Amino acid sequence: MKVPKAIHCKLVFTSLLALAVCSLPRLVQAQQNWNATVAGQSKDMAKQAVAFLPNEIWIHAGDSISWTFASGDIHTVTFLTVGQVYPFDFTQGCPPITLSGSPFDGSSCVSSAPSVAGQTYEVIFPKPGNYEIVCLVHAQMFGTIHVLDPDLPLPYDQAFYDEEAKEQLKALLEDADRHQHHAEHQHSIGDMFSAKVSSHTKSVTAGVGEIATTAGGQQSLSVVRFFNGTVTIHAGDTVEWTNLDPEIGHTMTFGTVPQDLIDPSCSPNCVVSTDPDGALHATITSTEQNVHSGLIAALLEDEPGVPQGPVAPPTRFRITFTTPGTYPYVCAFHDNLGMDGEVIVLP
Image: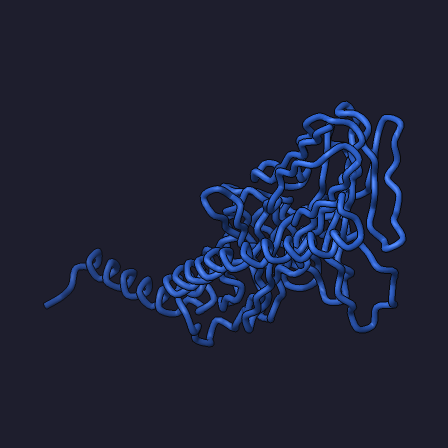
């Protein structure tokens, strides 16, 4: 039976199309977008999971990953080049801030802007390699992206990463109760120590936390609250704040929040001085004064190859209150998360 010419051409075209589809390079077939999460928090925002969730992912070259930010605290998604110095000013990106959807192959850095819950950022990975992802706001928050050749199999699928992210978030947030007990215990030790030095000093814990590790990087839990943050004292007494969080810094800010959050300040007619043990110290004589501790953080760890520096940053902040009144204060970094307190000064 002779096949009509029109039908013959259609069959040939269909066969060629099928062959072309089957012959497409595997790179095209492998391209897909993966999803991950940046950070997480409890409903009251007190407990912060400072982590990439999950913090280790395997993908193919040509794939992309979209990160969704899930915390009221700011974070970045950043990939630095090998040998690049970790930037101090996170507001400038890596620098610079790059558009969502930018490619990263290790030759030049890419970075999101500091972002909060609801925002997303996507990175495309065109070249095989093992790349570290970092947050420019939190130095102990990092992970690894393994980009494989498209001919190699991937060990996990998206469903696995979704479940792993949920489990890691749950593990971090549920660890908070133990840390609250630790903060309360530390507070009692502080009161005992202070009683030996001065019967007129009260202690407040400004946040607690803990760093956890996986094979791919580090994650941490931070409880952004002033423990025993409402303090009643008498005029002439001193309150001391200590930060027990190894990852996140805090401030004690009374009055107007200054533009410079890192350095201490006091106005009008007052100064922030340094006590012999390195703690910062201010004296408030009026409820109208503005006193800002600057960044108070746990002592930084030493790093191999880095010259030994002074004990920094300040780990404690003290204020002596000379005038009765009510003095509300906040952490200028985390007041949006509900980190505030109050000092009530009696005659």
